[in-house]
Each structure stands twice: as structure tokens, then as C-alpha cells.
Length: 477
Image 1: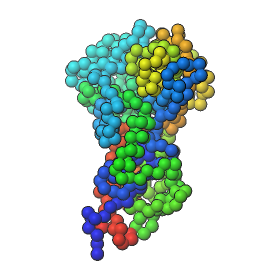
Image 2: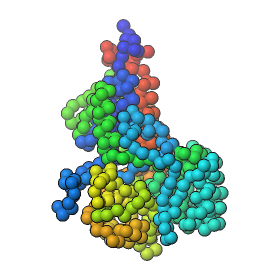
Image 3: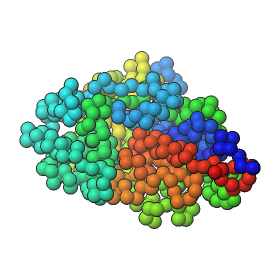
Image 4: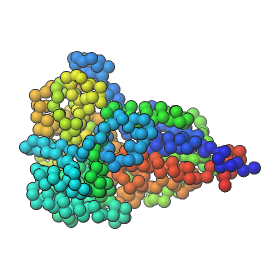
């Protein structure tokens, strides 16, 4: 006798505990599925996590147990509605803050300039600050406005846009090398983790259209006020347990096999049967686990996507040297070298050092291919001068601690043609789905893209017919 659809609970296995896997697992558990999530690391959160660092013995504070450090400086925009929805589901939305109005402080030779939105409709909401932006000449400001209007009309979903270089498009639309360096890359490198010449026009258009060119409030910047491990991983572990999901940490999935109408998930501790599997692991791991013929993208897709690194410099100083929540700047760190884009964040309160005389700064360096393998002492030497130029008070402060964190595979490379090798949510094999910021979300590798991919995978799981648990391999009609 065939079981009714309502009486059957799908057994869902999610592989990977980053934001994509957390989202997929939580949505499926909320829908009544039996969910098991496997994460190889000892924590959830994926690329967004935190750790404790000890204070030096000669640093006297009431915080002898050290301070919190995020592995990277992850911000979001008001247009990141899927990510904000996940925060609401995790019950941690109030542990973030979002600007009332977009305001990017930028260090210039004459002080600090601000890219702010005004009260006009998009894209005119930025006109007032752009017309006064000191890093551009008057002719470049007018040219920027013309190019921005043209970028708003680009079809970001088209294969032609994906195959085109954003840098070439900017030059074709009258942008000087100086304008690309001083403004387009100032924003684009942080958002895309790639310079204009190394970025797909489609992904660049997505970033600028969604964040700056369509809705005035879309680009308002938000960030966590607590360590990312607390905001994401710890909150997810609690929420998943409350929803009835089983979370297996330090559990590496070694293989997937199909048989008798089910999937068999192989770990070091045994073989777990599953009706549906969501692979929410990094591209290289996913490519290793996928059975042959599972995807309709070209062979070697994972290596074609590649990886782009981010380097973070961390400074603990003995006084306040940064007034703004964050400050952007452009620096030439080597003679004749490419400019580096520095985004400096005040992480003092988040780290648990609020109320002390100390200030903890984190400096994010995106598209850091030329930096990621440099020793910490070389990075300190190279960036001390630029940081003192950005933060004049730093020259008179004592740096009590300096260290570096590196995310060698922070994102996939969003180069021309990258969308063509990003696989979709569903595979060619029944009840095997993918999630991750690297899948075909239409977004670059962001927290928003990761959550959207998890939502899409959960929808695919719930749309597939459940397997009748009373009859092996029989799908409920």
C-alpha cells in the first residue's frame, strides 16, 4: 500500500556547514524533514568564523582572557534580503547594525571625503557627494555619471555580459585609468574580490545595479556587532537543534553513492542513508564527491572557477586612531606597483575590548594574490606607511599587537566567463542538489549569494517526491 505524501518524512543530508548549508538544513528542518548536517570542521559558519587571541603579558586590561578576532571583515548591504531573513530566523538580527544612509569615508590627501546618499531617487541619490568627490577630476565625475547610467542598462543575466571584462567595458565607456583606480575599483574590489580587469561585466553590473543604481537605500552598509562565530555558527547550531536537525561536527564526508533509490553518505564512522542530499561544500570538495555525469557544465569546472584570496591585517593599538566605523583608502605600497585598496574597520567593541583605552583595527585587503604568501613582517613593513597616512594618529600610537589572517580561497574568481561554469542548484541525478555562493545564484561570492543558494536548494528538496520508507527505493506518487 502506497504511503501518503503527508505521512512520509524526507531524510535529508546536508554536506557543509557554511551559510549555504545552514540555510538549506534549517529550511528543510522547518518543513518537517529529518535533517542531518555534516561539517568537517569543529564549528559551523564556513568562511565566517571567529577565534580568541590572547593579550600580550604587558598589556594591562580587565580582559586577561584575550579578545575576539573575526577571520575576515564581512559586511552586507540593505539589499541583502535573503541574508537578513536568515539572521531573523536565527534570532540574531538585532546583533547587527545598518547605516541610516550609505556613507563611505574615504581618506584623501586633504582629509576624509564621504560618499553619501542623499534624498533624491536612484541613481541621483549619489550625485551630490560624487560631484564633490576629490579623488576625481571634474570631467571624470561627469564621465562616471554617464558610465553609471550605461551600467544600469546592462543585462547582467546575458552570456555576452558574462564573457566580457568589466575593465574593458569601463574603458569603452570613457573611463580613464585614474577613474577606475580612484572610484570603480575602490568599491568593486571590496565587493567582487577582483579588480575591474579581472572581473566579469555581468557580476560587476549585478553589484552596482543592486547596490547603488536602482534603489537609494539598497547600498546602506550593515555589519555584525558581535563576533561572527556567535552571529552565524553558534546561533545556527542552536537553531538547528531546536528544529530537530542533527549536526555532526568534525564529520568529513568521504564519498556519495546511489543505490536502491536512495543516497548513501560515507563518513569515517559509517554509511548514512538519505533520500535527498544537498552538497554545500566548497567547489573542489563538491567536484570530488559528485558522481560522474552529475553536472551539465564543462569538465574541470571547479578548477576553472579558481579561488581568489583575501588578507586581513590586525592591529591592537594603545589609543583611538580611527573615529569612523570604517575607512577606505588607496595606497601604492611598492614603486610602480598596482594600488592596494585598504578598508580599515574599528572592531574594538565586537572584540570585547569596549571601555578600554585600546583600539582594535582590522584591515581588509581583497584580491590579494600578490600579498597572500608574504610573511607577516613583510606585510607590516609594506603597510605601516600607508596606514599611518590613512590614520595620522597611528604614527604616535604604540602597536601592541600585529598579526595576519589569510583566506586563500575566500571566494571563487569572478572573472569573465565565470558564470558559464557555475553549476545550478539541481544536478542530473535525482534528489542530489548543490548549494554555495559559487553556484549559479547570479550574485558574486557574498553572504547573500550563499544564503540564496541554500534557499534554492531547500526549495528543490521540498519539490522532489519523497521516498516511501516502507518500500525500499519506491518513490511516492
